[in-house]
Amino acid sequence: MKIIVCVKQVPDTTEVRINNETGTLIRDGVPSIMNPDDKAAIELALRMKDLKPEICVHVLTMGPAQAERVLIEAMCMGADEATLLSDRKFAGADTWATSTALAGAIAEIGADIVLCGRQAIDGDTAQVGPQIAEHLHMAQATYVSEAILGGAGVLATRKFEDGDYKLELPLPCLLTTLSEEINVRYMHTHHIVRTMKNRKIQLMTADDLKVDQRELGLKGSPTRVKKSVTKSAKSAGTCYVENPEVGVEKIVGYVKGLNIL
Image 1: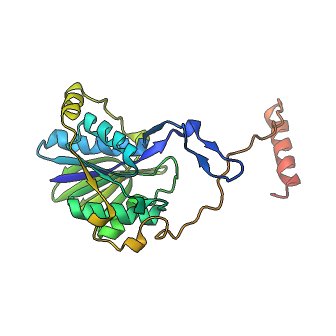
Image 2: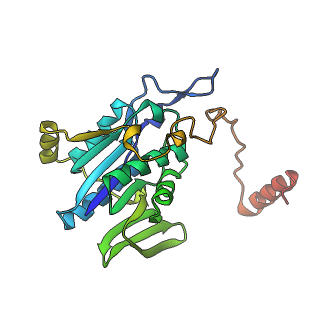
Image 3: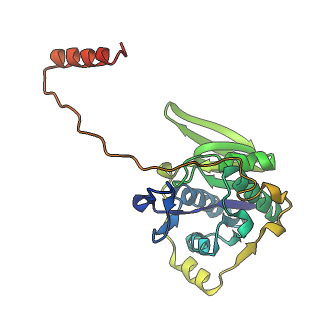
């Protein structure tokens, strides 16, 4: 059995700056990290491998050469194989073009289970995982906090505000995971040494994919971002210290003044 985990190298959003003239992100000099939800997806795959050592965990990322770093990190956590999907033809891809490329790579590699993070912290769209499933005609479950192999498929727990939902998916299938619900393991010395001695990272380009290259990169992206802005500082609010009865009257009066009531 093979599990493919899609990961992404993202800027550390606590240090992201915006170019005020162009409205675009300034990525130069900003440190990059593995997307947190994707790291949770690796953990979920490794938990399955812990129970069935014959499972092969394969990590996949799309990006420039430097994105290899997140693949190395994943292998130091315990992943067996890695593929870097890198080509200038992928540049400027939105979620649709990105999912098209990743689905093409997954089809070439082959997978019984595909795991993705719920969303990337630099885009927050939560679209790529479900789009990959649609491209590959796979059953899918999003917002997964737990998954185990059982029967002829995967038993998954989906986490929502109103409770947990449990369902069984047939293979092949795709799951997207929640970082806040999964405690990720540290890199193990054994895996670090193994990875440093033998980095088996496969390189794939657009020409290796059986997809229409007109659907890749900027040309294949129907989405256009006009401008990005940071949140501006707000003025201080008004604080009242009153007993409950007076406090309620003031709140109701304020809301009525806004014509909400």
